[in-house]
Length: 89
Image 1 (spheres, rainbow, N blue to C red):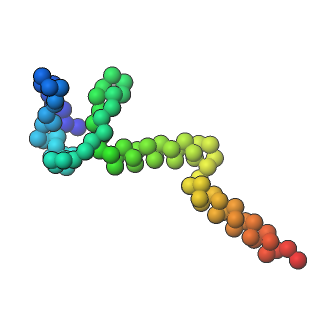
Image 2 (cartoon, helix red, strand yellow; image 1 turned 30 degrees about the vertical axis):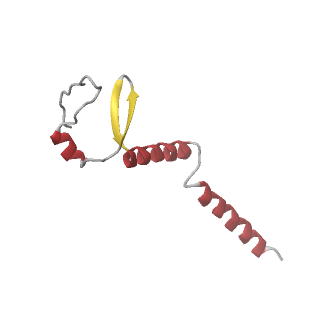
């Protein structure tokens, strides 16, 4: 983990140190999501944030007995029903 002290200038801007930009692959125009969490200012890549939230949702769903997506569950239910219909005389 890279650490660096930065300063907020008079306009409220912060410069991300070059070694951190390189480590994260940040280039000019790269958009980040900023939020405050537990008294910390966090900048996160949108794709990383989305993947993290999706993982949290999947873990929460699995903890409640749901596996996969709602679409997967619906398809499984339809297949079960179709198999029952095929077994009827």
